[in-house]
Image (cartoon, rainbow, N blue to C red; front, side):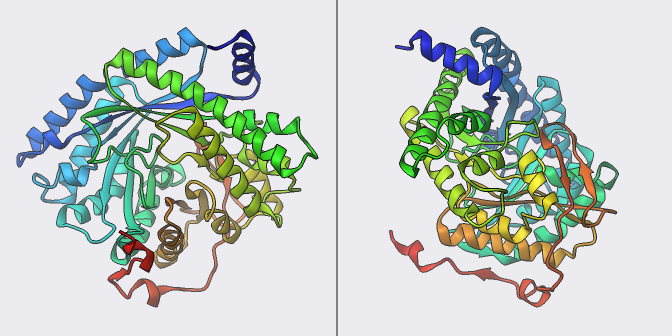
Length: 454
């Protein structure tokens, strides 16, 4: 039973500490939309998504009003489009037509993003995979709400370096194609290693092929709640610190579980997972960096940062799994630069570098996220950064991702404004030494030996 104290406590978290349900994401399988006729594929995709999602936004608004819980975003994820469009699409432009259909239906049903313009190429690329990847710059330039992701590596298969090389080029092409918006297209493009099938968070969400026809996944976030809880135990030992984070994560996840169950019932769609991720926003008091400072750092990037982040990430997961039987997605701490005011301040102060961020990704939930770099960065350098991050995921059996934004026309120290949840970011320096010969070798980096456990 929920007592009146817990009700008051949850209200306080919502009103004063930025607790919110970051997203309700409806996953929709499009496998039954496959056809050799491109026009028919587009019609089937539109119809399937519209019928499944037409009540999603209204349902989210109803739950938000009924329970007083802010639900910030309502989103859709679909089966990776490289699989859906493979039979019909003969050119990259054919895939772009599907992107435009996705954008149109997302606009019609009122969601802010639709994810799944994706390809899974951790071991190799089909002709359809490669065409979709090459279509990404144009697709993201011509749409508003479509998000794209490409999985280029896994612990079981190794790293597809041909795909890594191609993604370095595609990211720069996307930056160029959307340069009038400060290369905003790159903010909707993620490169993954070990991508989860049930991630509700954009830009990396897609509906996995092992999922049901439709499923509701919920992403909940509360960095401000954790920060406030830790303020009350300043100076206490690590046992008290860990227990406080765990208990707080438990309470936050219960809110997500409530929303997920209610949305599942209202839409008559199975409940998938709750993703408890400390996903920051540019709002003051909603920062993962501030939590790390509350743990005891003068500034993020100081010695001890990686250890503090590892502790935070682990305790968040431990608290979450006690609150719901179905915790999934990414679940843990995100460290995007542009979306976290504390991270921005650390970069501006010179305390946080790209190399330190890379070290932190060994223990966080995602990877190098929402990082602005100079627009004149070479494609091979972008590929090298991707390869490094994929290697961390592959060897450590964890999800890692790269969302770099080469801002065309801007250099180190300048600032780029994205607006909304995407925030703003200082352009960070990149190592000037080349890795062309490494990236251009071609082929695949083999999986590490522990992939043969089974």
